[in-house]
Length: 297
Ligand code: BMA
Image 1: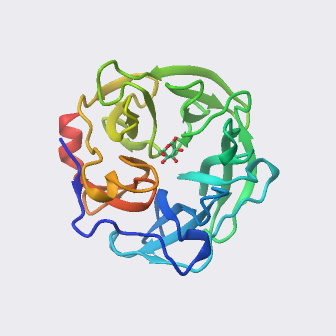
Image 2: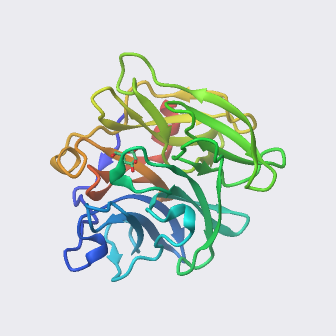
Image 3: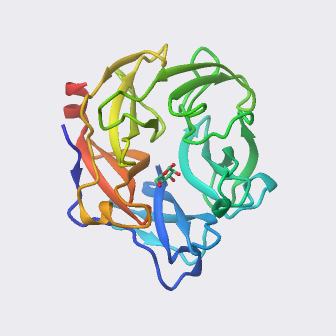
């Protein structure tokens, strides 16, 4: 089973007229807001500093996007001075929570320090910074579940690497009971690293998680798994093969070659629309019928 790429890909490309996003626009969270598909995407202007900001894109149909002259979220807190990257959007208790990579030390300097930042918004114009979490590790690829399970918030994260972990919290700040639930698989398209993609989507069959797997050549592909609704560390089903691999020119050639990296999926017209960063340069969308994917899982 493969995702079907939209024939108009890429759907968002760097804008040479905007200093902050002239280099690359890529990994994006996605949600439906005021009946429009909204993307919050990572943008790079200057490759010498490599500091990312977040831009906003809006669309009525999910394929044709309007973008704006200014980023909506720029580094502001001390812990994100060197960039806000890879945002994921989760609608939780009436607020949109953004989990993102908060970069604390300069990127071109090697051993970069980064953590999972949590911010929230109700209008996608102003973003309240909360804090960073699980600060004992360098950590990224954090996605919040859209509801509590047994009265606790639930998060997938990625530290220590190269595994996917689930942790629980009463207050979104202190995370405990970390459990490793998925690891790289030897001699496969995901034998080097695995990490969460989009926030899990609730279905009758379980939590649907679109994630990424990296092989030893550093090719990033997408996979999908289904997690138990009550015990999300239990993988009910997982597809052996990737559902999207970097095969198109715009996925193979960019700032970082051979990358398909999702941070957001929306449900629209009986399909899942999977938004993904391609080669750390532009944004594509690929879709799959909801019933079809749930049938094969
Ligand atoms: C990952 C993340 C992504 C990026 C990918 C490929 O570690 O940092 O932002 O798209 O690498 O470069």
